Length: 297
Image (cartoon, rainbow, N blue to C red; front, side, top):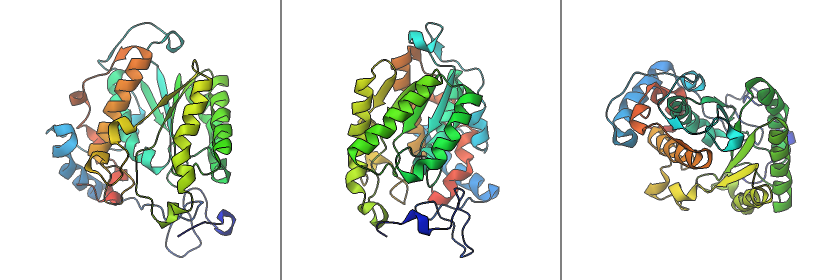
């Protein structure tokens, strides 16, 4: 699949299609179907042994478990994010890659005592170009209702455009977040397989991290850039990248590794010590239904 005329696809954001039996996103890419709860539980049971080398599972659950934060054991210094201390609320943004990472991120944040909410969206979630319209529509509502201290945006696989267009979108995001009283963390996407669907936009995908870094450098007090290649490397086919069988998304193990790395980087920025991974890495989030369609084991 090459370039897509998004106006020719009669699909809504949730993948409701035209009756052909395949749900697709606004760019025409098929969306992953969600499995039954029983299948999710089986996937979770198989995955628990491998998550961060820990061995205990605590049942199965859903992303809702991660979205409701409790009191954790992570320690903090200071009293306000603006003074460089631990945030109280973190809003997570991204596409389906971010959606697969959200359950682990939510568990890690909950252990830290940080409220967490994800608006990562399969088949979208970006802020660049036409496909970003649903994000720009929903973001003000999320900022107003959740009132995050920090908004973390993982560059999506749909941030297609010229470097100038990417920078303009990230600038707009930075201003929107600042106006809501929060700080913005831009995170590069993990390396993933460039299939026929992505091939026509490969140059834009490769340019996006530099565009984001450039925007962060222009606003050092309000926007911060995290280079996830420090965790994943640059080769999406390497074992280090921890992609699932589709070469794009992560399973529970990879999501936990990302959550641990991200929490550590956030702790450096906001002067807190993350809760140890063994307090959250094998919790109920491992049974989230997002992992079923990925063939995670």
